[in-house]
Amino acid sequence: MAKGDNIIQLVNMGKTFHTSSGDVLALDDINLDIKEGSVQGIIGLSGAGKSTLVRCINYLEIPTSGKVIFEGKSLGDLSDREVREARRNMGMIFQQFNLLDQRNLLANVTFPLEIAGEDKKKAKERALELLRLVGLEDRYKNYPAQLSGGQKQRVAIARALATNPKVLLCDEATSALDPKTTAQILELLKKINQELGVTVIVITHQMSVIEAICDSVAIIDHSHIAESGPVSEVFNNPKTEIGKRLILGDGDADSVKPVIFGESSNSKIRIVFDGHSAHQPILADLILSCKVPVNILFANTKEVEGQAVGQMIIELPDNREDADKITQYLRSNNIIFEEVD
Amino acid sequence: MDAASISMYLEETWATIYMTLISSAISYLIGIPLGVVLVVTDKDGIAPCSSVHTVLGVIINIFRSIPFLILLVMVLPLTKLLVGTTLGPKAIIPPLIIASAPYIGRMVESSLKEVSSGVIEAAKSMGASNWQIIYKVLIPEAKPSLLVGAAICITTILSYSAMAGFVGGGGLGAIALNYGYYRYKTDIMMVAVVVLVVLVQIIQEIWMRLSRATDKRVRN
Ligand SMILES: Nc1ncnc2c1ncn2[C@@H]1O[C@H](COP(=O)(O)OP(=O)(O)OP(=O)(O)O)[C@@H](O)[C@H]1O
Ligand SMILES: [Mg+2]
Image 1: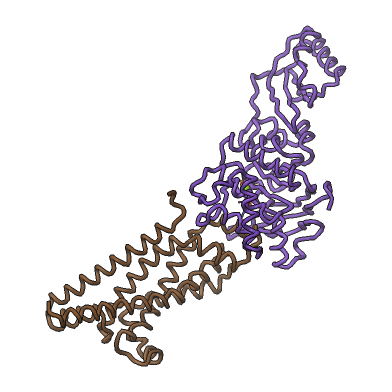
Image 2: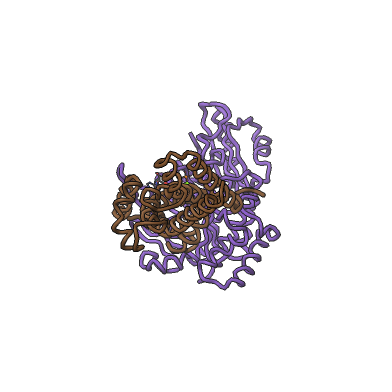
């Protein structure tokens, strides 16, 4: 399978939980193609169905409709044994790390190899190599209780990579960590993606995580995929309500509304900066050349895929003429904008 | 104390230890699988099966609600069949096992349930089979808790074994019963009781230390 092919395809996938208090529809008609070698983000509010989705990918949860296709094969057509073998090609890490407390780091990392019936000596070599990759080689005799959260997640990553998986599933892998440790773990995931060519699937409720490492993103809302596509596209032009809320919002799915500085009844426009324009003093130029004061209601700039992108909501002046001057200036300078309310 | 009573104490102490250890060992051989089946077949277990879970649970509860002394008498024919006699320390072993295996099953169940579902999920995500989850995750991860449970179970079996005196089973319980109850020699009874207390303390301490020393969750 070549880089760029779809390694995972979710086709009309749905999941309903049958509980004593009735059915819970966790996922409905999910269609998503994940490209080999990419970093795919899945973002949504709490309860949207993110964990269920990722657990369906490795069949920890069996979808109640549709298909999960891994490397061209539908997991639903495989026997239990074959599903377990397929799982060895999909490592997984978790918010709570889930290390084996009674095993030292080395034995934690050799665990998946032990299960796969790998030769002991080879397993040990491989484990040490992976612990080196995550920077914990000298701690191999320690136990999980002796590590910090970030270190535990590194061990979990080493363990998930032990069987040489093609895919790494990360369910809120950084949600229990502080911002600095989060950045380090994301850096490590990026490195694993780039150097080992492992396809990484990142589940998160933080926009900042998506911005930091993902190529593509799927926004999941109330069991459905609201929108999906390359991060820069979705980010620059969110089409759905939830997309706007996640992106315009503070970056976190948790925050409720974008912070708007001040109230106004005048018409407003949203200016989008793409990679290059973010570095130009657009607003200063605009004010200088139009000689019209503008009121900034909201502004937000972020790094996406190494490029500065952002958006700003400005209030147009009362005066029709001045307002036209501004829109004309933007148009003639090829700056993307739209009217908002 | 004269030589004769010292040798009597030694002999009966040994009989008590013998009954306790053999019964505990065999009870654990039965109790661990019982506990595992209870946990595995539970509705959030790795192989849910409510019929097995419920039936087994009911059987265990029935055995656990029969008072030991009554059970002792009820199983006399079975004891005769198994060990060929209804007298002596050997005769107390079958009823002890029948009484303690279900109890141990419950203790093992509660220890295994302490293993976090996340760790089990992680093992599943690595392609572990149910068997591998049982013997590579559930049991090793629950080990400290299983050892604490063992301290409780073994000391309980020890005190049950003291009732062997009622069926001519021997042991420290028999001394207490024969001298203290039938002949009003309370001093002899007290010594037997003190030896029992000391034995319980020793067993409790050994297992708790074992549990603490082998628990890797403790930073040291
Ligand atoms: N085993 C289950 N039984 C019943 N309902 C479930 C089960 N697992 C998940 N659900 C339900 O499915 C929905 C989606 O849950 P899921 O855990 O996938 O959300 P999530 O997006 O991961 O949320 P969070 O960000 O809080 O982790 C929720 O309504 C949840 O209650
Ligand atoms: Mg979740």
